[in-house]
Length: 381
Image (cartoon, rainbow, N blue to C red):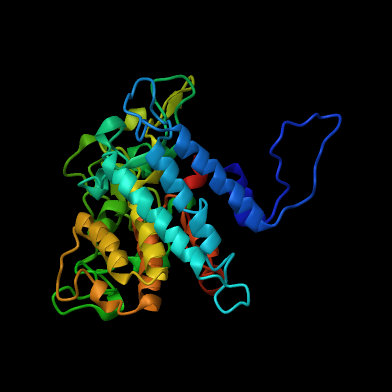
């Protein structure tokens, strides 16, 4: 994983596979990216082989955060090995070196990872809004977790304070401010983009939160919405200039990211003292939903449009999008190119603020066209 982090930024790197003597280093210069990916895949294959019988770790007390066999297979498929190697960044279409077979390899690895994950009991959580609020074995979606705690010394993080408004003990960070492009990425409630909205679920530029994909409301707090922080079930969030909430001045933010907030956490518990307190929310680095997105991408690029749509359909059904007249919006993607754009947009929405957007823009070579329009909160972890 460390080598992948370097390779996806710099390409080929010095590849050190033997212990080194600091007084007599044996370095052979940079390897080609192809050699790097071959070694990365071998590392994941070794993990998969050595994790026989441990498809998934189940003890919250002693095994929480360990990577099981199904997760290792998913990371391999992700080009966290193969998806990167097949992607336009390393395999640009139209170039003399373009190799379409890489997508077939990525597809087969994704299919294998999906099968393993399903057999291990991984599945989508029923409620998108609570994915980051459920920890331990109760979270059927979390495949790779970094564990935090507000009760263990120096094991907290400050995300709760960075997303909460001032009236609830927070000091909201600009990192968690959605851009207009991020807001526009959310489709309508029947899966259609706002530019092609139906008469049943029309788009209103003023009431831009109305009739939208329910993930909008689950992820973003806007003026007048119900946001039950500190266990206040009817609490409303106001964001207009000079707003006051519960008698206190509100932070001057047009939107807040509610995705990582813990609704029942009391205002007094948001801060830290003596290296305790704050947010103990576990950070999910890789979840089953991302595997579905990876599988969809590899399937689409391999000519398996039906499988690609099935993976996205699962996400949209879980989100609460209705079937409508266009099959959750999927009927509008009639070919590989249209489905590719639908998938990259779906990644932006499903994985919003989870630190994935920058990699997605680079890997798909969308960055020169669109730029990195979505600030993510992942750097806080």
